[in-house]
Length: 159
Image (cartoon, rainbow, N blue to C red; front, top):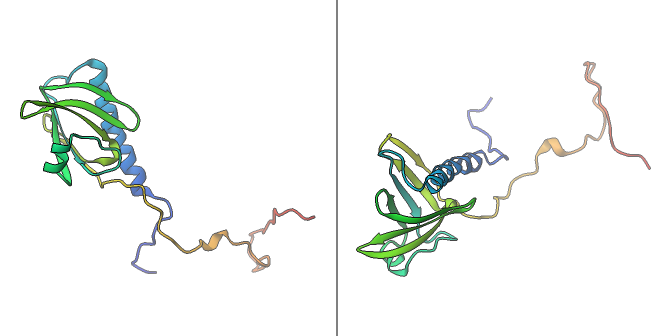
């Protein structure tokens, strides 16, 4: 046996990241529905400013060309959440701004009131890496007759 773990053909990391991003969406959706943050809860949300779908004012993207953290605590407005992401109004140096942030752009979500934090890899739509054909998908050329109790069944249609 080898100590090397084989590469998975199932993108488990992406599936888990997507599920955890859904946690952020659900939490923000509840804040949207109730119209405010419950108790002392507040959020630090870090995101990639150049990620696809991010829409922030130019002066912010120039100031934060890679990544930015926003705080949803006291002064935010017009929070709108959907399946893809959220938009929110915030003030930066007394200048109001509307930010549109897809969940895929989020790299961090923290609620310091309850010591809760999630870290994400920046998600980008990329082509899957090429890989070898799985060996178990090839039909057997001949039935195996090794004396075991395994019965080989061929479901292919004969014409």
